[in-house]
Length: 426
Image (cartoon, rainbow, N blue to C red):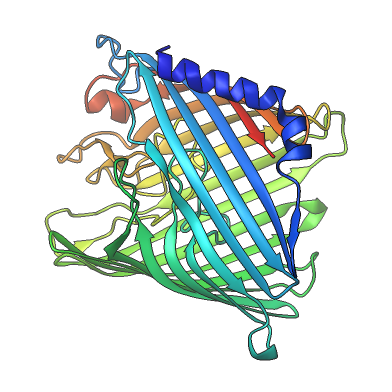
């Protein structure tokens, strides 16, 4: 471990040792007139070991990565009418015998927004400024926190809620990361949308519908990708909770017409047994391009999706040219502990398209279409422990068993991944 990473580790340990004092003496609430002000700190440190992530054991590229993220924030609230929120974030990455990932950013502005509630006496709220967006289960628009860098937007959001119906109308620009300069919005990359839902009561089915417009007017790649979708969550017989989501994409990708879709379905049930087991079964599909040489693209793009756990924990896949069948069990031997074994099976939806990882990077491409569709299986075990309300620890191991598609397209050694994570939040 280099000196910088050792210094970061010492800071985290120091923060942990002094957490109680800080919470009592620094991070308490203040009052200024009608305003209530509070401060927050969120420090996360994670170490990972990666082996054969290129599926080639003959290359000596195994090693460790260290991710550190510090968030400092302040929130000011005036009754139930106004809220002002400011948050800065510092991101650092260290490595040993492995290439660093592009996840660093010196201390910069992550969020800065004003929320005004009850406009004109109506059930309307407006939230303006730099902010995170989270909708549904995060399969299309989410502020995923696994990576150091978190999606954020310079956005205006109009929120309506009356009785059992809610709707968000939003428009703005995605904010890019620039490690050496102030993070600015990508003036060519716009996200607009309408997201709405209805649920008569907590036990009734939840129905959500959305229309998202992702525009990118970069001179090198003009994109207008429109996504319309429906999500339904309901409890059926024997307490089984089902979630179905079906989005459809159309529009233009440069000179090609967009025609793509995806399907998500999962079913979960908790059992009144020792360790309170909860079993969840999942199926995902996202279309791939049927003919890369024609004037139509069938590749579904998951926009600004959640990463990491939705499609395995090794980040080899996302909701793009894939099929997945997965099973997961969550065990709670104690209220502070969670043990989660899982297995995921992956296929490509179309072998003329590429295999994409969680960031959208192409891992393999077979232009002949002769490679098998089955990519492989991931088996994982995660352990999470909440020391208290402020300190959370977790660790995990996963192994990827390479399938015929990997063998047909190059080196096909299995891959391994191990991590340990510390999180302090006050």
